[in-house]
Image (cartoon, rainbow, N blue to C red; front, side, top):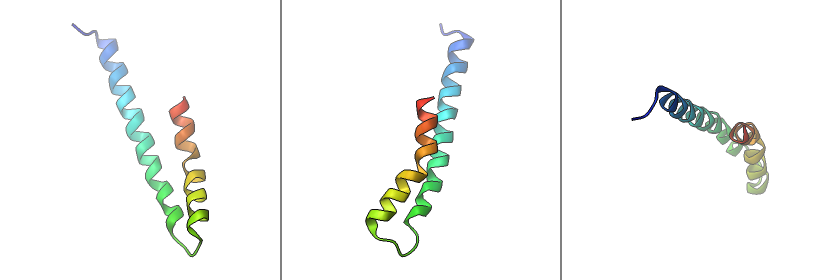
Length: 57
């Protein structure tokens, strides 16, 4: 039988992953504009830095 602490940890993990996915959606705005595909991809990666940092934590 799972303890309450295990359930709290799983819920917190799922919420953290959902939050990172939510933040990652905002990185898609890097694909607007008249920039080349390479610059758009670089911008996309730069916009994902906060999500990467949260995943590391």
